[in-house]
Image (cartoon, rainbow, N blue to C red; front, side, top):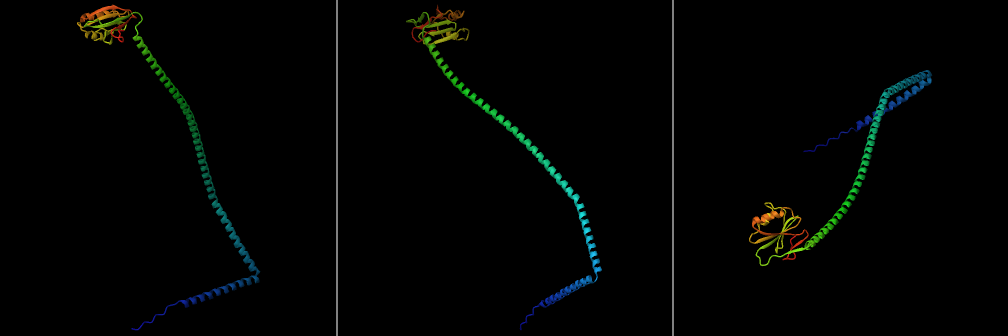
Length: 291
């Protein structure tokens, strides 16, 4: 098979050249016509001054009319813009007054806040001063309390010392015989009975077993259930006997009641009257005595 010949490329270059040439010719013609018109107008103005004057007057009249219309338009625009501008000014003024009022309100509120803060600060300072004074008084009271506690401890120590001294003195006095004749009792020899000394004084009945080294305070009550009744109930008729030592301060009837109860129990007893200041001592020991 034979080859096909390639088709020739289509080109618009010649058409473009034609268009360009025609456009250039038209422009040149228009320039020539314009020059002709200008030359003709100049020629007419030179040959006819009246036509030129009329043309100038018409041009002036047309310009004045245009200027008048422009002035009227400007005046109308100004007349239209004035209310709008005035309203804007009023709005701006109102907004400014509102801002000023708001600023005054804020300033007043700020001033009130400052006053309140000043009052609170003054109150806080007064309370701080009061608290400081209270703290000072409390510290003073605390110091006074500490001093009082120290004084109390000192007095308690002195009181304990004095009590110990008095107790020692009482023991010393108790160990010494009372003023007056000292009565010494010894248990009987070759006796199988227990001897009891019964002292009757203003404090009631006090009993001591000779050689027993023990003193019992029975009191002044001799009724049923009393310590005196219990002591008598513990005695035995065949093994105990009592010696009643009656001081002047003994309660009336106490001796008779004890005598009656001893008789009822079958206990043998004797009675002796002693002085108020006479000392009674158990001879079987130097440490025990009947008060």
